[in-house]
Image 1 (tube, one colour):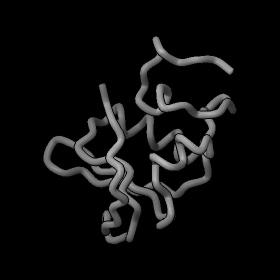
Image 2: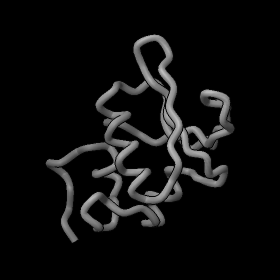
Image 3: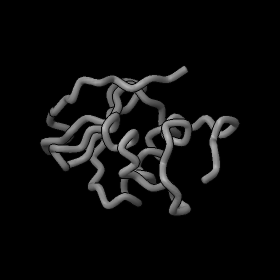
Image 4: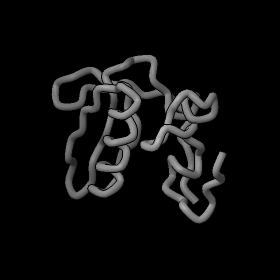
Length: 96
C-alpha cells in the first residue's frame, strides 16, 4: 500500500524552488497529481529523471500529508479529497 513521506522537502525542479510532492512516480501518476493539484489552484512543476518523474508545487508551505488529512484539497468533482483518492485506490473510496 502506498504511504506518505512525512518529511517536507524543498528542492529546485527545473530551476524553480518547489515543495516536493512525490518522487519516483510514473507518467500516469504524474498526470493524475498534476490534474488534482492544478484543480486546487497550485502551480505544478515536474521533471523527468531517468524513467521516473519528480513533481512539486511552487507553494513552499504545501505538505501533502497535512493538506490531505486536514481535508484542504478537493477532488476533480468537488468532493473532499480523502487519502484513498490521493493514492488512487478506487475500490476503497468512501463517498460523502
